[in-house]
Length: 213
Image 1 (spheres, helix red, strand yellow):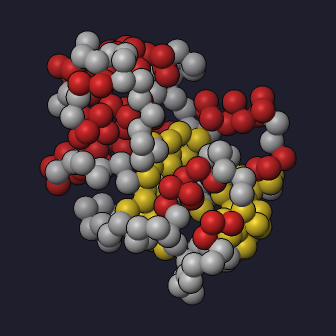
Image 2 (cartoon, helix red, strand yellow; image 1 turned 180 degrees about the horizontal axis):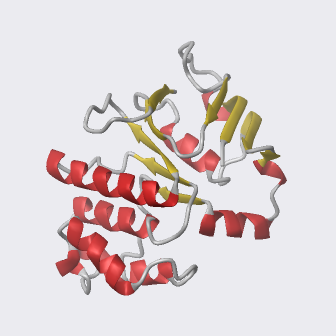
């Protein structure tokens, strides 16, 4: 699935000056299966991008399309299916249930599609060295541990695209690389693409290309 931006300009960002290579106000296509870095300074709309692609924000001019379909034409039922099977996300605020355990957060998500076995989920946690937190409340984890849980949760579903908004902001270099390698492997297995937003250039991974806001 390709995602197309056609002269999209979020209303809150319309008064801000954007560079000539910004995706805002331009025609840009995100080709399915590609691994993309979206680089922008603070306040340029990284979170707005993620929420727009996911259909949460509709306060923009222009058109966003999945393949040939304007996303504002989707019904509620269609959005449910899209968010369960086509678009996975890691938002900046993570959206974990802090009063639930790591296991409960992950298994609740997985029950929507039964995409992974419980052991497969535990294996992903082990790769990120947080499998020992299985029964711990998410609210008691460090921010870096919470980010890793949110990343694993996003992988507990089938998807064409994984949209991540600064997912490594509380992780050190070693853990960031581990996460990137795991994400890339999961995307390759599904022939899916990802978009990772970042404040800076990121040379930790051979992205297919970089976009700017």
